[in-house]
Length: 369
Image (cartoon, rainbow, N blue to C red; front, top):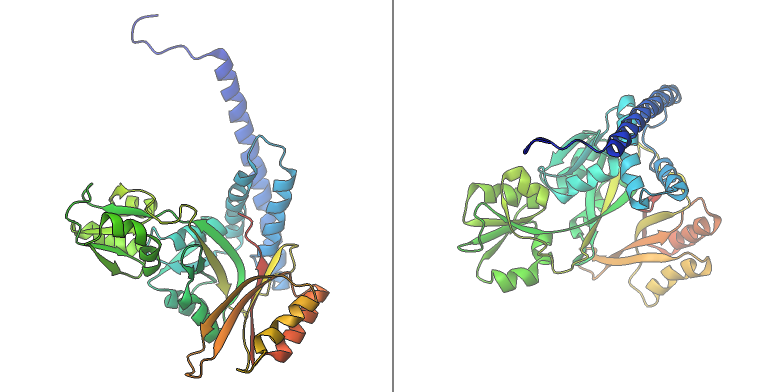
């Protein structure tokens, strides 16, 4: 063989590539068959007046596939593959509009695409308040809002807005949050301010105190907005995702600067009850509610008794001031189970009876990603 001439491919490799090409063609045919069936389902749903997106149904499909997965494909790879397939099929029925905290490159956008798939109409918003307003008004079918972080705890604004809007939760997703320091200059020198969402600044408090102790920490509406500002001024840096860095042409000056290496954020998928029914039981569900009790001795204990007596497990219990000036609190509670279960239904009836305020925020399948 002449020097510099391309090597002759191994015949065994060529044969394997041919087999892969043949399987790809089979897969494409099967996905299109699935899409055609989804279109037939869509026509039936239109006649019945039922909704296109059923989170409990999609959760059951993915769970079933993960259980039957024979390998070598890893189980955690099954969910994103099928979520994209279902997203593409769903888009043939009707476009799904999803609001989230923008602009492009935020973790909220990543959570929205991870939950619904990429075949959606994206509706980026400038604040969490706008996500709630847009979804309440019907300009979006669903909203995606952060509710809890493993480092900083609850996202207070999201919880407060559940009290004042009619939206309820129909799904959840959690996201590994990797924060990076982004900048036009590939250096830590001469950074005057670091721009990011207040939660992100708090999640990186230790690193920023050690490496940029004199830089101002400047809160902005989102991490992606911080990246946009950093792209305009070399004196600024941002704390944001790798995707935001690519979106705005920034260097990753320091990767993974979050104080908790396992930092995760939990997002709620919200919608208006007039436009979407509550999900049916999927077999692994969460029920979220907000309650308050009268300010008297033993009131909180009385609130918890029905849960214990009916064997209902509580996975979250958070308090927020009622802002009444009377030292009263709202309690945000996550329960394991679905109101269709008799023990849960009875526990909720008895709990409602002892509460001064009771609002069911939603029942939805637990995160299966």
